[in-house]
Length: 103
Image 1 (cartoon, rainbow, N blue to C red):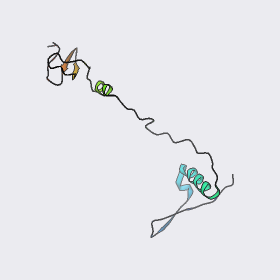
Image 2 (spheres, rainbow, N blue to C red):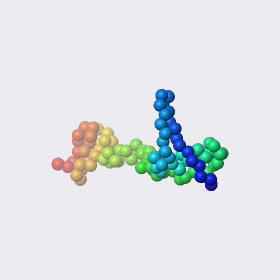
Image 3 (cartoon, rainbow, N blue to C red):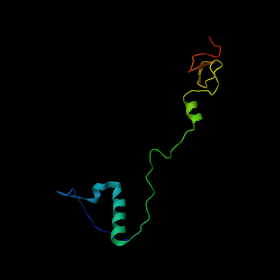
Image 4 (tube, helix red, strand yellow):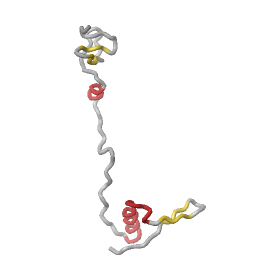
């Protein structure tokens, strides 16, 4: 592959600024690939994508969300609500405040 020399000139409409490719650091290779494709029609293989902090999107079901919030899925014996959370060895209803018999 033939080496090319280039400088990037940026304007905001009133002033010009030249950016040397070395100042781009690791992104200089991507810029050179784009310039080559534009000027010479080269279709150089794209580098692998940079790893991101979040590798995938996770969608939780309502059951998984409730479980992570501490709800057990049991029905309250007093009001019938399914908003029971563990309190020690007992369950406490978040809707009416009743417990499953613990002290």
